[in-house]
Each structure stands twice: as C-alpha cells, then as structure tokens.
Length: 132
Image (tube, rainbow, N blue to C red; front, side):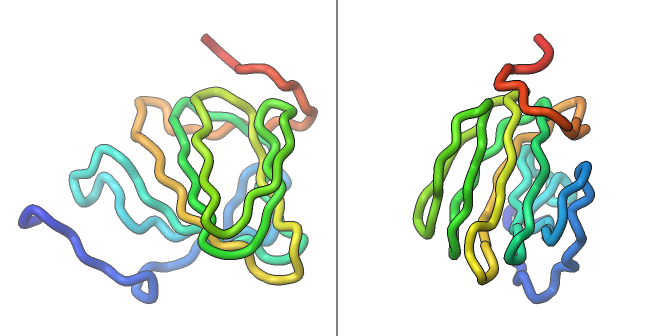
C-alpha cells in the first residue's frame, strides 16, 4: 500500500450476514486490516422486513444511515434512525437493527479491531452490558 487505498463498492463482494436469526442483511467490507488499517469500514444493506439480531461484541461500532429508516435497540432503548442520522454503540452493549420501511436500508458501519472479533447473538432481551 502506498499511503492510501481507493476502491468502489461495485468491486466488493456482498455477503449475507449470519448472526443468529438475522435475515435479509448483506455486508461489504470496504476498508479492513488488509489495507493496514486499525479499523474496518463496512457497508450494510438490510432488505424490507430484514434485521440484524440482538447481539454484542468487544468492539466499538459507529453507524451512519445513508438511506432508509430503521429501528435500533441498544440495551433496551429503542429509537428510530433515518437518512443522515448516526449512532455510536459501546463495546459489549446489546443492540439490534431492523429495517422499518418497504425499501432497502443502507448504512455505513465503522468498527475498531480488537483481539476478540467474535459476535455473540442474544436470544432474549437483557438491557445489560455483557462481560467486564
């Protein structure tokens, strides 16, 4: 790498998100540690009636909504986000994202790399921070 990396989303494969019972959700990894970055920038598309199941992990997460509307649950606090909105979610906080419109939801999500990059699905609402 020569101090920068340029790409286009058309050239990045889209993968189905497989977190618990999530459905209708697709991810593209735009910037990763392959470019010697300490963070990852990902593009998500959630189809109508799609969602990312309630889960938590050891890394921070920042979302910016490009298009559409969603319901976000962070530790039992529900809110709606739409175009231009953004949210920061701390480590180990449970969260889920649901598309609430009849069109695609599109957002950018930036995360930091940690030693444990695993994702833990939660099958019941807890409203608590997990781990230490």
